[in-house]
Image 1 (cartoon, rainbow, N blue to C red):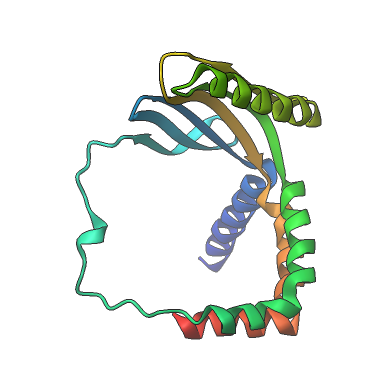
Image 2: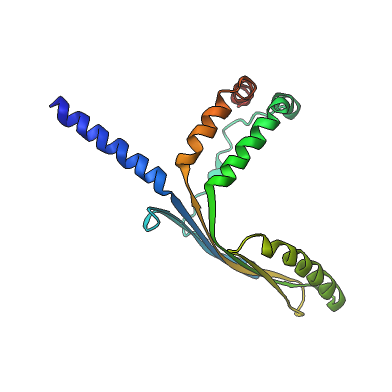
Length: 194
């Protein structure tokens, strides 16, 4: 009986390790036209199996903001900043390791931009194109574009974004970050301010 239980636990642990090693795929598609936004967020494991899907605008009319009975504490930002100041170098190193675990598969976004004045539209779309000309060559999967519209003040867009995250690669940097005394003091300070 004990052998069977140990085998089940071992199989579950191996499954979790394989899951973390293969990565998690996050897909986000959206379309904004006027004041209406439509989109879908999907989280997939093994790059194929959906575990979470969220469409917006959702049909649920749940408002969590209506809970006015809860008292909200004001956080002391100066105190938190003083606690975080010695940790900035550690957070920078951790952020670099987090960015190394994220792999962009597809980042395609398109902006439709217009203003009331034709001259202002041309001026600002030129600035946007200049920025995009610098940003687009930074990554081979990055495709950002913009087009002007002269039909009044408009900011619309659509896009498809897919990112893969490999959580197993985050375990060692997370342990290194938490092992720093200043970071633990910061975490305790944030926890106490809650």
